[in-house]
Image 1 (cartoon, rainbow, N blue to C red):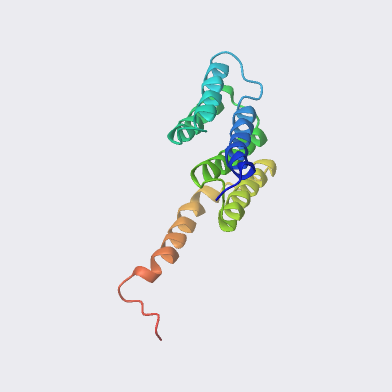
Image 2 (cartoon, rainbow, N blue to C red):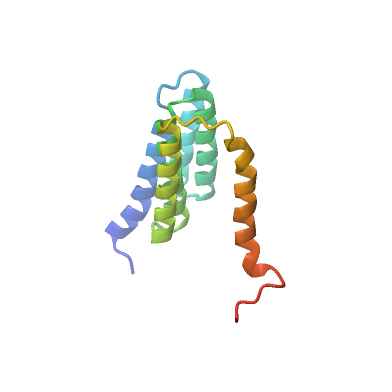
Length: 150
């Protein structure tokens, strides 16, 4: 049996991340971007009672980001808040440690990639090879000829 305080936390914590997500996306927004941000904020409010509205709120926040074009750090903050919002809203107010570490790790990696001005003209040539190597490592356990009992 849950206490009223626990039920309030399950309702308020995801909503706080939803408001942070919309506020970060709407930084320096005007015109149409503010209208989309207001719709996203309405989606956050509705999602407290009807969970599918949380996904709509995140998609409207992405639209706000596209229209407002805030700085990359505000975009990273909105993305991290969106991940926390969806996990908490759909996960009954709980998040696994691996989910939190993954979201924060990817958020930090994106922020570092944006903040460090690295100019490597050969990087677009190496990226497909790195992706192929990652794919091969990921499917290795499922390939027919590989045996793990040796």
